[in-house]
Length: 214
Image (tube, rainbow, N blue to C red):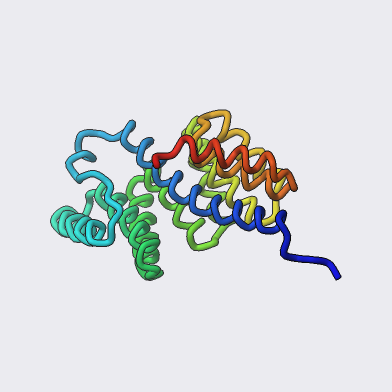
């Protein structure tokens, strides 16, 4: 009788679990780094990104008040959508993601070229397992900014979940070449694990861990 619980299986499961956590965190960190590099002074006035449930609640109230006073403030609408998406991950309240999507779609109607709105929408679709839609949005974002590695991560994630491995691996490779970050290394680790290259997967996850804060 074949043994299903062996060292290889345990290592594979450990890699998958580590990848999920690493990609989620690294995406957030890289996304914030990219935003910080591009932010205008008015963005800084909205406050820095927060992560705890209490801080996110406070941030949501602040942005809702700002939008109440200035309904046409697209920048605040996008920031609120991003914060709602973060709170969705913390609380598991799917209704928050619905509200975030409505904000983003309205923002894109008012400002079709708003890159942050498009990028946040791609992340939202991934979180809801709407992989084909995530790919479409990320490809549009890629056309606007082909050197932003986050777009290739979203494209690769979407293709990977749909079983389209060649397209996924190509996207991850491009992401790695643009910026060898924790998010990129973690994705490469997952790709190698799927290909049966456990040694290479562990090496990539070690690199991912090395590029992330303790």
